[in-house]
Length: 252
Image (cartoon, rainbow, N blue to C red; front, side, top):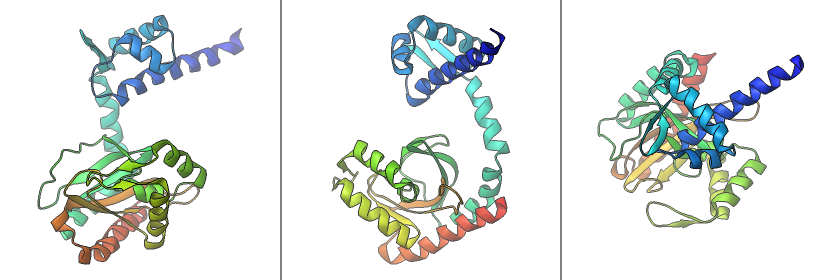
């Protein structure tokens, strides 16, 4: 019996994380039954977990359901203020934004998404709000530079799931077309996006060099289409690659 206790404890922890991840994926309150279904747990078990999380401020509840609680901010703040990656990146992003006049951002891959970790505003504000912590796709914008360096089976699985997709411009993209673009990104060392995730916006991104299983972090500059004309793309590609290497050197 004593040997089973750690296993039971770890399973309880995993279930609590499963519940939090369900809430993390939504942008609105979620009903108990829906949380249980998405987490693959019995309703009674889910209720017990939510009660504990609510008591610790990690979950909040109202008449419409459950959502992440204010206690989740504490962990996020601790990460943002102690992460060596972010400590290294902040001054580099500020310099990149000042030099290019564009908004500079840092993203990190998590599963099949990329997460906004830091931003430094450019001369002109972007047309949309993109807060730190926002989860974005890998097959659009700066995500492509991370997708380009993933293992082939991972890429194939993601592209099979996405299938044909439509950009913000209205243009359609097939999996084969995206595969071809990923090859060009590997050759150039940076990605370019226009009217992909947001209409009227453009971006250039480069991945931080990384050993082992490939890059997980990318630097991006973004602005209005007019801010990134075709004759500026190569120079901006150089700038984002320099920034990526600068962050890597500061981490060494």
